[in-house]
Length: 411
Image 1 (cartoon, rainbow, N blue to C red):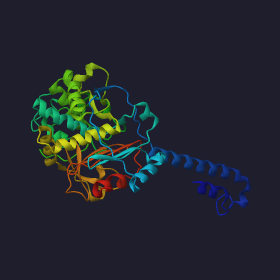
Image 2 (cartoon, one colour):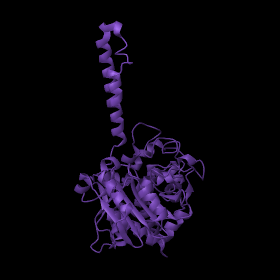
Image 3 (cartoon, rainbow, N blue to C red):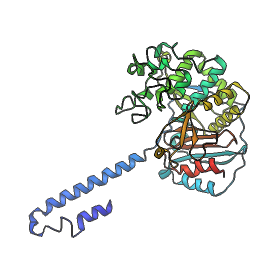
Image 4 (spheres, helix red, strand yellow):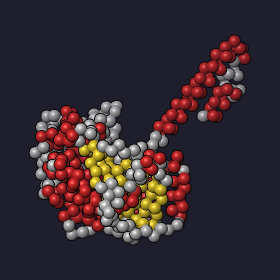
């Protein structure tokens, strides 16, 4: 852009120097060109800044929570210094460009890389990292525990919750909603619209910050047209799933239930939180829980390790995780959309129970990927136990090198 400004002002082939016979208009040309160059400069600068707009990890305290455990799960550590760890150091040092805030590799039963460069809001949060859409997968994990404890049926229609009565969601089973195959693709979601939270292409996201009851105004008198509806990634399916679970187990039992999962079963060290949409208890029976989750980097690894242990266990929650894997669906993205330099969602062919599955080049591996806006990642190899967690304030770090290649080839 400096070159453009220089050319506008000083290039002898430019209009400024080609108007020797029009000296009286020279000042007008100078003013016009300088103004144009200034507008272009600030316009492109703003575009660049918008492209690097960071993710805020601020926690507002409006949440359903579970306390950290005094008997938290101990993670063995045997740190290594190698090419990867040194590369991560550089990515963290250049956080303004890469957005990388934390990076952990757990392999062969031990943490081997654990690097952090937390931003001010993460430090103020006592290390809590915002999940963004990684929380969708954790909603699925909570749902699995509800299936096991409260006998929820993955294959039963959700037609016993008044909030979604007379809408296409009541026509769906819990498994269909978890698989993002609700048949809602003509109203919202990534299949036809700009993102996971837009209603019918409107300019601003609404779904994520409104109760399920409020969102149902767009779905009254709708029906699921096909049993096997296409995959349509969106936020509302997740919110329907978790708030249906809360409806079934009872709002008064919900935080106790989260404690059983995260405090007792996982053994997190610090408090974890699912955001609520509203403080008002009057909204709790309207679908007041969203999927945004907060935990420390180490606790995300504890959760990943527990998911791995559960998947490989002879238990009800293990059955649930294996069931959603076996019932995964095709994303049906064009081949050109499967890319390896962005994030897990873009590099996978299939989806199951709110997890991204079947990485390009690793389709035979059973890898569960949790993926969140701005570069948040928790990726778990269910066969060998390798876990990678990434916390980020922006999505410009080298995802292929520090996530994909490690999952594919190891250290």
